[in-house]
Length: 432
Image (cartoon, rainbow, N blue to C red; front, side, top):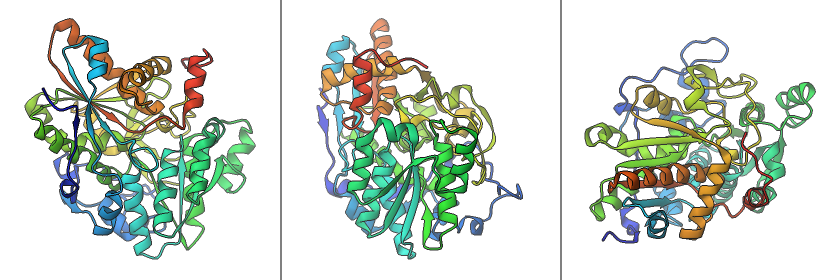
């Protein structure tokens, strides 16, 4: 029987990130300048990003070396474990073997530091003193505050207002790491003031928070902007997850039939799945992206060029989008409340390489509690979406008596999201 927990030695930590751009089924449509609508040049991104990250964003190298300074920080929690969910299997009475790759062991409790540390490092190397960013549920903001403190930098986080109010402990974590946290939309930026004038009671959105963070960075010479998802360099850094997972599955001679993860902008899901994409159609692997029915970008959006932010300050990228003005309902999976998706992920969905499904909020919390009561870990509300579909697939395997191997990307824990579980347990949570 395969091991309950599969660990890698420290020296097995990946030394290079995997870049999927050379292995896409067709070239990625170029990002466009927000004003001229012409293809973006590297220098167009310099007001926002350091040159090292811009080079990665546009690179066609299949593997990019991870700097030793970044690896040194990664070793605080990486490699992360691959765990067999035997108790969940027994509860479901399924012949399927279920595994989860657990990213909640990082100091901030999610997969987000994999790119936060890298981004802070490259900014520090070029003399940047402060980073601005947005955050939904607070996991990305927590990770960037953690990373900037390690490299002696400042961090300003624009947190979506509804999440700022729902998740006070996430704010406290960011402040404990030395970050400045501002509910968005705010009066601090022109973008925020315009939104508040038109809708003073808006719950906010990731698109609005991005507008504020971009504006703040562009107006201050010592400051750059940092994004937690969507862009190529962000997804690149997250591939340490999938690269580790491949080694762990090989160690126990398992071949996955279904790989499932949650999707907001795509960083967690892409990091988990991209190292498997090239060979997936040869070996019959199904790669399933799960999003909330309240913000169904991949399943109900249009595949077209759109802005990454609400105001229209960012480059236009071709992606699945619900429209950059879309304000998602205030569901508790704040990290999945984004109107668009990563261009590379959108292309793979459009080409049928990756499947996409949308699930409702109540069913995800039901799945999260099943997982907590069998495996002992309370998943983040975002991760519950992947758990939901994994359980559904395991029950289908039970009906057909098939020994499927299902792997879940468990992107983080939910110990700072207990107000969401409280709302579910008390019957105050609704489907939207």
